Length: 627
Image (cartoon, rainbow, N blue to C red; front, side):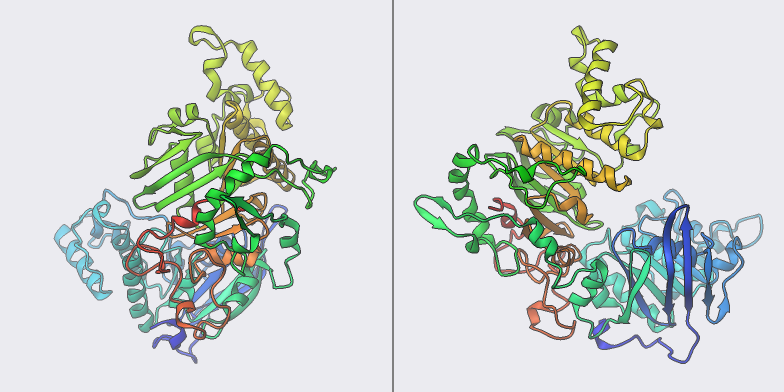
């Protein structure tokens, strides 16, 4: 049964709400995380909570589970006030959360995890009785798992079922599921949804948090949208037009293409072999590029590359006084291919993909959690070893899974987490900025401090890093300046390709503009750049954007995309690869191939919609380049 079929059998309209939150306000210093939001989930209801990053979803979950005390507002469970703050046992008996990252102890057995810190029978554990009780608990919820098995031996799907059973064993009848499908394949998602529907029919209430809107239409009865710390929409899923749901998340409407016009570049007819090709032949009516046009684009680049050196930017392309680029900037036509991949694939990460990123071009890889975009970026940089395919930089093949070889080939990398992957916190700015060029800082493998400082000063000046000097410990810098140091290290070898994963995460607005300007400048100086992100502001500097969903490229957009169409593709709402959002009508209307079940991820586990392109879906849309 889908949401369009109606609410589950366990929904009891006259019963008190399983959870009711009203007027919730939460501040963290000057940051307003929740601004008077509310939420009501009925017994037996699957209620979706959706919103972009920073909308307030995680903060609400922390309030609903007793982890954070709201500044104001009330929370009630089944008509009764929420337990006192700090009464962990009482909170667990009312609500439980199954997080995206597994919270079980891998070395313990299933039975031990189910009754961790509450083993029956007093101080002496009766193992046979414990396993029997665990087996009865699992059987009661239809979970086919051996209680004696170590949890690390279970599949991701089985671990999730164990966590749901553990949550319900405390007596909770409200379960929060945070991105439960992020690590599941299509068959696993179907089995999970089947189990959730069974529990829903037994009266269990679910709050379902997901970046994949298509799953909202498949499973949920009601959806609530948060945006910028506020509640902007609560509505039944059945009959809710998909365009309205996406617009509520993005504040983007059909009248909003002011941003689109801001990024639109003049399209020129490309010629190859005497055949003229107009810009209209490149794009579908919704702004995405067809696979045929993308394939034809490769031949057309030859003529473009010949004229690339003649292209100049107008004065408007210079930085504005506030440090940002003007909307009317005219960029050089991209030249020769710098970064190429051929059938690059990572098992469990992303399907085979062919990329062509050209000199002067910034390519965006957009995608939500578990879309495969981060795994693709890390594979390009050598942090992951691909299971198939090749990566080439200016024709040179990069050794799979080798960071040093990727550096030597000309790939600079800005990692997703600067604290865990990007910085040595107790070392100086100079030492951090020069980690990738230590071989250039002295003879015979030595590192001369004077040369290190001199090199670092150049990077500090060029990136405007606010620091007393090169000797300053990097831990003493602001988040934005720390990120600039990470970027400085990535640029220290003058890379041919810069791969940046969420380059503006955790920085202020001014630093964000500066960092994105640096990425744009890298391309404008003749290199290539790849931005991997789910932040729309990061992707606005890109010349074209590929949207990934469940490891597949589902759409490609040239500069000028709207928030609505890109978010729809990232959330799995495209009907066909290479096109914009699916039919904008209600979920139970419209043509069969644009209905909610067609999300660009086939249920055979391949993750690709059948678009008639053959078995290797998701590759053609990545070849070529926006004109």
